[in-house]
Length: 445
Image (cartoon, rainbow, N blue to C red):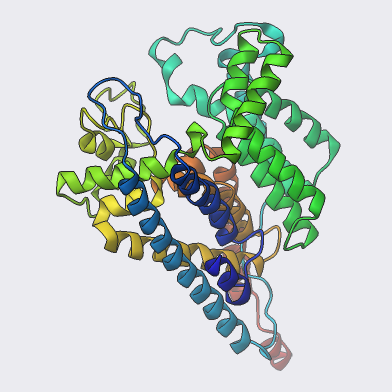
């Protein structure tokens, strides 16, 4: 609460600010979960197979203290980012305005990228996704080992991402919103990868606020956002039930039970605090820190595993930390940003990495809001901001995975628009140098 008040008074926080997203994350996955454990809720690994050691309440309490320390560090970073921006903004008052030099989104680039990515996305959906109207068609194309490649999953999102780029540029027109609505329903029925529904919805929320010039959503939108957030927890179960022909009443029952568990802090998805506690304990038991080396597998990311079967896993460090009594990697645990920071440098890592990440995000935010809506800079901020919930949950590695990889068409639009802008600007400057100076022309006459 104290950090929220400080951000409100000194951090210039809005619903578009990265701090607002983190506060929601902290309350939902740290505060609510900690209260649930205090009330007697079972911790991670409880009632698992013999030999698996449950997370103790002491480990959870220590994780809460570390999470609060990270929140304090990030709050200080966001307040500093706001103060630095205020100081720079004040110092430029009275200076004659200059023409905008920021790269702007190119309409042609959006159209060209869309013309390529949209049909690929539709083909991937038709070939590899579950379509309720078509029955069990998880894979209608046999590509051998490539059927299990991440590319078959990534490309399924391309048609939806193209629609998001069109909505960003042209606004919430029915011709874009209606097919996007259909796309989101298809993604919701997949029974996996909820981010393909949640991230686009957050993206639309940010775009709506930016286009309206609003700092906070109206009450109806906040209420709808809360309903959507609660509905996202049982999304996997609902997707599987739809695929297996579950009745509407069964879906409602599962959704109701899931929401009740979330409110009481007992949902399996709220075990993120327990998983953070497990990460800290495993790092301490290993008697080692990674000092940034855990990011090395990102350099191998562009190489398909079909070409390099032994390619290092992105979460290689989790496999190294896992033990038979705490199967961190094989159970699909997430470390959180703080767990990843602790694996890098212990408590010092939590303080420093949390501060640096928050300060950079704060600088990015303040720079974005002072640029044109159609600038590449603000477009890139929206791409990153809508994925921050994944970054806070999974660590900085997700900043690359969920932005550069899973939003590839949007990244292509940003990069190609920037290149196009730079080429036009360079051509314009060259023309100014070649053109005769007006004063010299007059003197010669």
